[in-house]
Structures are given as C-alpha cells and as structure tokens.
Length: 262
Image (cartoon, rainbow, N blue to C red; front, side, top):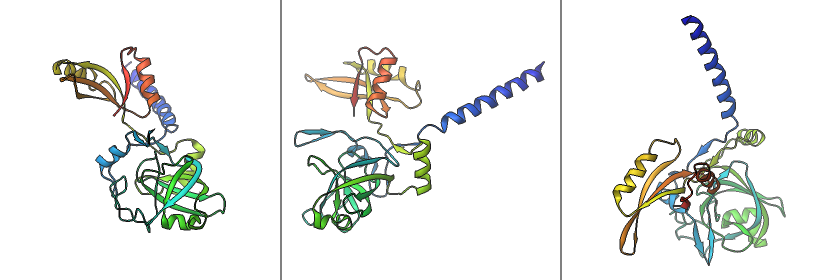
C-alpha cells in the first residue's frame, strides 16, 4: 500500500512539474532596475520616479527587449558637453548615448532614421527631450551617424536591445518576440497604502501582518508630518505597474486603500 501511494505521489509531482514548467516559459523574464557600471542603485531609483518638467508630469515605466517606439528624434551637443546627465554621468557628446523621457537608465536601443535608413545604437543616460512629439535626444556623434547634423530632426524608430548597458543576442531577441517571453525591466515603485496611524505601534502591527505573506510584495512604513504631528503610513511595495497594484487592491477587498508611487 505504501509503495502504491509513493508511486502515485511521484506521478502527480511529475505532472505538476511539467505543468509549471510550461507555464513559466510563457512568463516574461523580469529584471528589477539596479546598479550598473554607469549608474548607482540610488540614482536608478531616483530616475524611475515620476517627475514634472514645464508643468507636465512624466512616469518612467518598464520596457521589453524588442519593444519599438516611433516618433521624432533630435540631438544635443556642445551646449551640454561636460555637464551632468540624469544618471550622474558627465555628458560626452562624442559618446553614443541618448536622452529618453521614461525608459530606464542604461537601456540599450537601436535608433533608425526612417527618412534615410541610417541607424545607430545608443545607451540611455539622460532624461528628455522635453519637446512635444520628440521621443529621443541623441548625442552629437549618434545624431551625426543618423544624419541629424544636417536634418536637425527626423522621424525614427527606437527599438530596445538590452539593459544595463548590454545588448541581448539577436537570436534571443527574435525568439523572445516570437514566443512573447521578452526580457523586461520592471518598475517596483508602485504600491498600495494599507494603513495610516498616528502611533508607530499601530503601523508596526499592520506591517507584521503583511510581512512574509506575499513573495513579491513587501510592507514598509513611511513617516510624514501632518499638522505638526507624525503620521505613519504602511505601504505594500513591489508592484510592477499601477494596474497590478489596482488589481491587488480590488481583489483583496481593500476599500480604504489607495495606489501610491514612491
């Protein structure tokens, strides 16, 4: 009898393993933004927060290998040469870099000029361009390779090739696009506020209730001064998008909770 039960258990385990393996192949590989040889971890987090320029708010978001954006490209050069970029580097107009309003720092992209067929590969290390309709601002040398030194601006396509300053193999990109398992960078600065307390002890209790309950979400306590008194807010962080956080809120009957972005 014991041997029979063991055999049945092994069969069930094997079937479940195959099922989970099949499911996992359909899920995108996720990489959280972290330090690279170009950008510190703290600077990465800072550049992934929403920000406002000239009255307009921008929301940095995740990208996937193979993702394409189309729009207008411009270039910037001598006036910015030697100044600091958003990721803390000193801008070098002779290096192949670019500014993008929302994609993560050190994302590698191919920029193709749709008007003359020229292309180049650049690494995002700055924010911009803050001009309506423009999607990327190339360095001087990259702009020259695209023909922007003569054209000024041009219609382009921008394709994600990799992250952290590294380009994914072309075969892997093609396979990822075909099987819909693209590697992607995910923001983890979306959260759900699950409590707010005047007393720190109350916030600690809620934090303990949520600690270890979820694999990908972690509770934190944030202190704010409201009316001259401290207010301790408990945030459940780690959601990859606003929609993911909203779905969690709705599916867990958290009527008094609301979405935040750290």
